[in-house]
Length: 307
Image 1: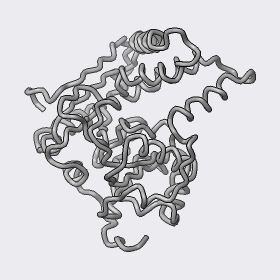
Image 2: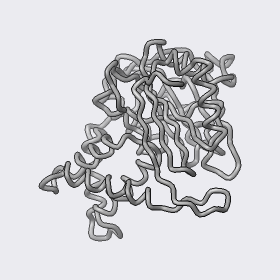
Image 3: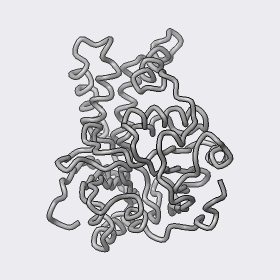
């Protein structure tokens, strides 16, 4: 675990982080999320363009004006215009989002024989970390099952285990708090890992579908304070707020409710559209003024205008 101690250094720029994690021709999703204005912009472009000075200058401008900056960690197909599982070209990374007790989880990872040394550790806010491993030869299903298993062993956000997840870019400010917290990245390994390098036991129950079934059994228990529909509504609003693709949210809910809804896709779409409308109706208070602003979701398919 100490073979790359000399690499444990801050990543100086988001452009270098992108260039190190992707091939120049990889098509990646960059998400710009302004919670104060209710604006979400997704740009799908090549890694080379995303790392360019012009694109980085645009991201810095957006960040300075209140937007959080994220990047999808797995390349998309050449014709993709959205960020769904069907759009994933290949699995390039595995990751964990240590959002509670981050230091404890990170220490456990670094001293564990169950996982190799991470390639990058991002400090995204006080005591919160995102841990990234470069990977190849791993299927989408294997990646998600492994990430579920790592959450079970090391903790972390179980919602951040899908292959379409966006993670923060180092060098930009985290705007979720009253005071800006600049995301810092540290490189800890240059290796690219394979499934055999991860010794975390993957039970058949780690498959996303089984995870949904287990959560469904929990949510439908008589002691649950909320109905499953209320859980679906809350999930849709959380996913929309963090900038997840609308069609992907609909697909997840429809898959989750496939066994107990006569028309799960209609139900899921109705839930997500209503949740989106509810978010649009909420008044946003900006600099003391009560102004109702409409959240906008913009998805760009490598548009010609800057960036």
